[in-house]
Length: 516
Image (cartoon, rainbow, N blue to C red; front, side):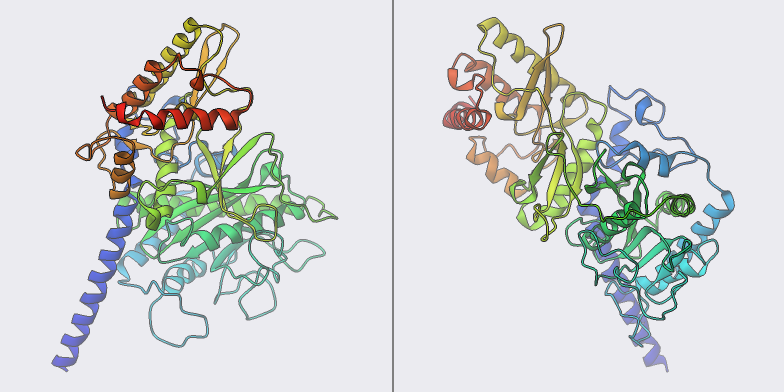
């Protein structure tokens, strides 16, 4: 008996240590979880007591002062999570569920099907099933084992069974869990309102969140088919691995039926009291959202035709993930994408950047088969220095330098200020409005470079010893532009594609002078 007990204890300790180590790696790889909040308190442009500007400040009863992790979270998503009051009883119940998970011990991060009879404790069983059994979720949440949606079947629900075959995910896909309303008149299938997913890496849009995001696009399309206006649709995603949680949301770009995803929170740790409280609050907000959507679906008419997922290319610009430079290396591309959204979120109120709006999974069956990042299209903006006169070129150079100083005041370094990544437009006062684009290489001031980033900088002529991000890098680009501003290859051209080619080619040709 003693020997058996020792073996069991050693096994549990090994599992705990391994799980803790894996979780720590995920936390470290997504170190944006708390640093933005701390940085926000020291940046000159943020003046409120909470460290957030007035336009981004959240009320205390919402998700606290946790910063957004997308530069421009749509107002409808913000209202869902940050507006209104919280029910203390509801939030308390959600918190108790999370606390039970915290004390339940190590859980397997490997998915176990509902037919598996093993005694292994899984995230799906110990976390998602636990939520679905508790009030106030008991009649509004269905998992792969606990069925509360009113459908007369004891089998897990495919998207087709739920009437959600239209979207990025295939009709045969399954959700780990979902919140739902009640079937409306003439239908035995309830409206689905939120998606839950359990994955090893709950913080990766490519490997961990991919399935949840794809399923949520089908849910969003399903709500439109039920008659909801696309501009009113939000589908929250609760992505977890038993300890770490991240909240996302799928929504439609304004006046389109093109679903995209934004990151609502940074990575939350349920073993941390603040993270636990935020996750519990998010759960209650999702529950209230479920009741609202259910009410709307019972009062609107179902569409006669299935809508298509179409992007308005006159308003939005996309960048393929294949063309994205991963500053952390190709093996860590997903981490770099999450990092891009987190760092650019701090530029949300600064009118000097064209920040990424959302992440969009590719749909092999559509005209957009590739994963992309979606941006606002800068209509009326130009690249290249003005041809008017030396005075105008100098004036624009000063405006570019002023925009860079605002960026640096936020503690951020662009790291790739080629002239092709600087767009401008003259306003009514004939002053230059400057917007930076292409933030793939963005770093915090003083942040250590990855090996991949060091290699790239060496190719541009920077010494290998420069291993930390600093304003010196952006300053070098600015000085080079100012030094060669009278070279016609850097001037404005109607053909913007050719202009980018000429400008980048010229600046690369003088790379050996960049660090002089």
